[in-house]
Image (tube, rainbow, N blue to C red; front, side):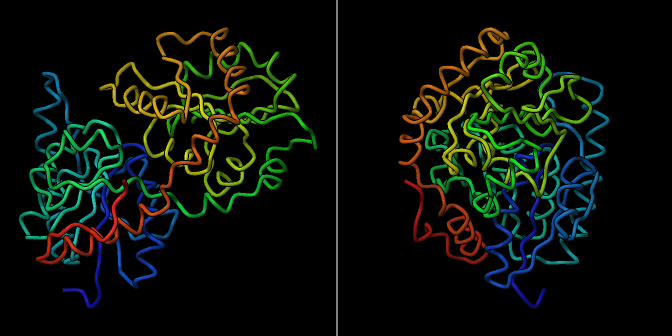
Length: 364
């Protein structure tokens, strides 16, 4: 048993399964809690180790909803991952496991159950993914972000919201503009990003209108690794991926064009950024479409469906967003999501003991 309260964090596959942990780490530090991370060799390893957080790699397999020979092979990978996670947890004996979902979290949840370590699992999207549904069978407490998600989870589940990384609130617009190499100008700034993997369809539609767009806007484009464009202009700055600079770059943006992964769009919401959301549809279970619909219904964003995306429709949607940005920002002002991290820490603390009462404050 460790001398101090310790949390095992897990989740991976996309940045959305990882970055919420970084919002919780400062809260853990305030309480002098220890913490470490169990993940795969995927994107989470690079993101977590860059923060100086102790990281352990385990084997994991993809959870598929269709028949495939790979499903049989991956069973053995998952079993190996369970064994590896078991001995990591046995060594550290954390008081609680916090899962953000993704395939790698399943072996960790299974191993935690075998060791009688409570699991708290957080679902960011409107509907739970397959990994979250499996983990729910082993979790002591399920928590979630969207109000609509409650009907898919046990009645004991708690709406906490999504924790927002505190460093995002420290972004500096002037620093962001300088980082992008933009000269002083009154032109509004558009931030275009397609998630941690980039988005070829968004990139292609944007590329066709960039010569016209840069006459009225300055454009910051997060292209994704290996997906850069050949376009060059003083009002266009492109990066494959940003880390420490991201908070300043978001601060520099007047409007945002983005996929609709839950964690990213709630971060933009907390920062009061008018959004045009283009949810991922192909190869997706449809979670981003539902996320985007909830945001549009609340007046926090406008939506352009991927299957309807063309360069001309993108241009018109940008113009509409620019016209509506002030009204959208006023709607966003009614959202209060800054308490989510403290609420989740409260849930983790209670879940680690015998008491299972609701935390002292939840997100309405």
